Length: 339
Image (cartoon, rainbow, N blue to C red; front, side, top):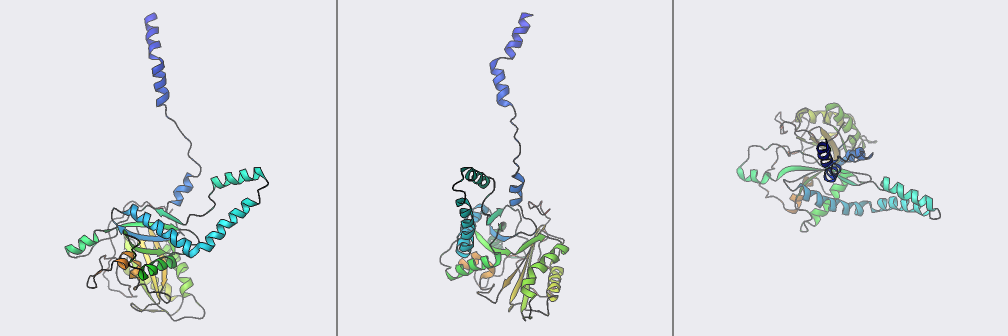
């Protein structure tokens, strides 16, 4: 009997008790704002932002380059608006200088809720750049770099189209001062929604209206430039015809492939659809700015070299050939939240 008690006491010795304490699972309650952080890192309907193609395997360095570049231009173009926002918070803090309790509450509120909106949020995506056409080996080796996509969600007061155009204009004027190494094309999106016909129509009407619904009527020519990657629901030709029909609702606008005043850009990646309009009547044209391709601005390709991506075609008109350059690879699991 005594031997049995002794063995039991040894089993419950200090070392075993310490081991149980050390290996005990430490549960923690999820933070209330975790869901908000996840939503901030997801692409949602109504968002605006900038799609970026970059060198494969260099997505992290591309994000770092763009974060520095975007922050610099945000201060340059929107410095006054950003300064007024910051000044408003400072004035609110000064009013509570004589109230210690009020100051403490203000500090706690500042910790719980950021006082400024994040201008640029990188959203991790996994979208290949598309299928390659029947091209020679040399061009295949060059295209091998064009296989990654990065997305930056933008916040107010950033307007993606004018913001990207200014960056490309400055790069074109000072092309010897290469600011980026891994960034390729910038595709600004005024608004983003679901990649379905109904959602596209609603989205396009809202984005097109400020440019085409004008009184008195201004005779402007337009072109449509779609890009479709990892998506098989909407096809290129019906999409072009659909957008052109929406434009006709605003007036008798004409199509021009080379001398357009307004370029309608439609970007479809998996279940994401974005629309924007580039105004060619002010500043440098879209073609002069190498279609917003910083790599081409800093290091132009030889003139006799053809475009390298099938889905990166010339602007198209209302009745294009039936052949499509859209990528039809099976859609991967989307990391983006469009619920």
